[in-house]
Amino acid sequence: MRGLVLYGANCTLDVWDTLKNKLTVHNVTFVEYPHNITEKANCVSDITKWIYTIHGSEKFDFILGHSMGGIIGLELVADFGLRCDKVVLVESNLKPAKNFYRNLMLPSNMEQYGKKIISMIKEEARYYNENLKKVLQEEFDYTDYIRKINSKIYGIYGDRGQRCYTNRISDLCIDDDIVAKIDFRFVEDSCHMPMIENHEALESIIESILAE
Image 1 (spheres, rainbow, N blue to C red):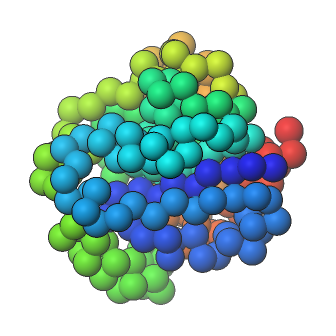
Image 2 (cartoon, rainbow, N blue to C red):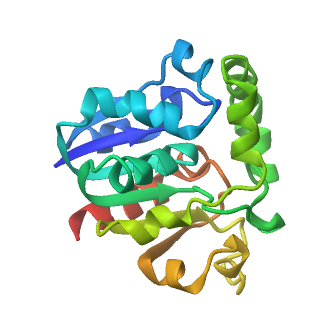
């Protein structure tokens, strides 16, 4: 299977380290955003354009995108016409979500991994344009991408350690027609960084999606 893997803002390829062995059994490209691109990018589309210039002529079985990477994946298909069968979103907010989703890691996971992850985020944040940071944090709405595309769309989110929380989909603040187009999966005992917090569960979910 041909796959394109995209990380989120203020991250590096290192976030995929725990999944690389599983993903590399497929023909996967892990995309790294050059600092000279992120420094000049005023919006997500500026990064998407750069990726399309490199991979636009290819066809992918799947795009796997974390956070901003998922938005890039949707935009590649919806607005740039990239051919792709499945778009797998990992912790990608299509609209500003409620407080349930506004946490980086569970406290126990923060104790174990927080120092390394926060250090990475602070280091990479220096290379991101302030305008891009704002559009990722303030009022945004990427749901039209979902409406435009025919690719199968999956949404993987951390359950924040609350397996029975009944509002976990409504707290994403997306319309019913968008909810209906997304196949939701939840990673136990993780928040925004499931590939760090519970990579085995995330691996299992991704493999089940790719096998469909």
